[in-house]
Every structure is written in structure tokens, then in C-alpha cells.
Image 1: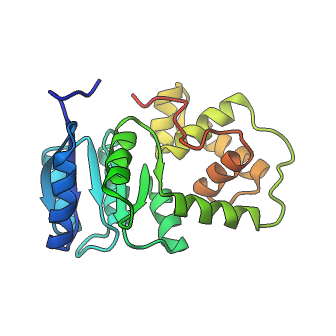
Image 2: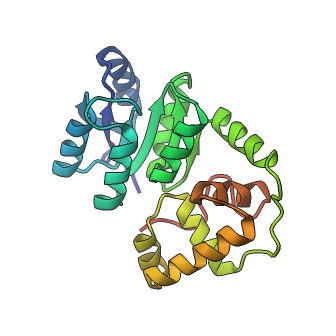
Length: 225
């Protein structure tokens, strides 16, 4: 368990030096967080993660060379053990959906308080989802307003396990390893889940299950390895 002698190691990537300095200041003031590296573009962030994988990568969305979304996809493929927290000023639906589909563990707006951002880092490190309240409200409203949200039948226990891991940003391969099943079997479960929930994406399926009370909003029932 992380304590004062083993702080959460954070990479901070933002192309605005003043913003980055402010975020670093209050993160470093937290007893259990240490910013070990900073990057001002996506390519530098990717390189630093490759050399010294942090516990949590805190990324802006819009950065030179590689976006936070592209870095997130790369992290999920090459360093699945690294938690990804998107910290941005953008709350547009396309950004939110793209980030969550890429596998980010959290999405917090820069308007959040220092305490909220610190807690989001802690939650992501603990294997939980960290979504800004405004983001959750927008997504839930979008889902509630879409037609035919009621599934034909309830998900099985295995399907719920698969969907929970999807919500935590696991790839199909990582889900297979976690549950001891093949990638092909995971794909089959996801096809059934999408059909039952009338969902067109992984994120939409997770949010529908949360809205119906089938999954916990923090998506933390199954711990990551």
C-alpha cells in the first residue's frame, strides 16, 4: 500500500509551462504524491513513460506532436500498469468519448479544485475511475435522452466482470489475462453486451450499466493486478 515513504509517482504533461508549474506545486505538496517528470508535448511524455514508467500519467488533451488521446492509446498498449488521468479545459462530448474509449482512467477539468485533482490522482492509482461530476452528468443525460435504453435481458455475471474491466480501461487482451479467458472469448462477451445494452461503444455500454445500477459509479469492484 502506498504511504509516505513510497509516494505515488506522477508524470505531468501539459504544453503550458505556467499551468504545469501550478499543477506541480499543489501535487508535490500532497504527502503521498511526487511529480517525477514533466513534459511539454505528447512525444516527450511518451518517451519519459517509456524510460521511467510512473504510477499515474496526468495528461492534457491538446499538446504538440501527440495528443493526450494518442498518448493514452499508446500507454494502454505498451504500459497497461500506468494509470492515465486526463486533466484538461475541454468538456466537449467528442473529447470525453474519445478519451474514455482510448482507455483513460479519469477525466477531470482544470476548473476542479486542487483537492479534487489530488483525489483523482489517488483514485486512479487505486484502480478506480475518476470522472469530473460535470462530465458524468453530461454523459448520463446523453444516455438518458437516447432511445431504447432498456436492455432485452440482464447481463450475466461474466459479462458484468468483463464490462467492469472495460470501464477501468483494460484492453481485450488484459481482460482475458485477468479473467483467464481468450481474447476471442472477450470479444464474444462484448458483442453480447453491446447487443443487450443497445450500445455502440465500450464507454456507452459502461455508462448504461452504471445508469441502471448494475455497475458501481467508481467502477472499482475488481482490482487491477
